[in-house]
Image (tube, rainbow, N blue to C red; front, side, top):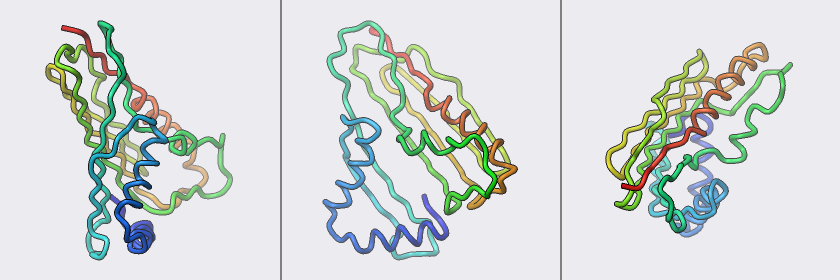
Length: 187
């Protein structure tokens, strides 16, 4: 979900791409940068014209593991792109740090394993919060299915340089939670 100046910029960009296949290919490329085996099932873009509503991009995708002839499978979320990983790479800042716009990024992920596997271990749910950002991640699992809800709110567009280290520490916590593993075991 995008709001403000960034949503206006994205709306303009999407208005000029009339070909739905080009839009799908653009999003598939972004997903494949995270994991090359991801398949895009559905792409819905809402509120391109209605500027009173947030601009929303919903992607449904899946990917399959190779042969699973093991008793235990450790699964990590394919969320972080290379750009996300480098977001706060500077040691410190002397100038304001700007991300362009306030935004909310929400993932609702469902993972389904073959019937021969069950959820054995889920990471703990977590919330991290500072004045400029909020991160929530929660996990539920039953039998061979697992759901993950992940929300990240950036509540600033530009940040004073003296707040950069707090935001960098916050981002390290987000990255740590995004690297959490889910364990599935054979029945």
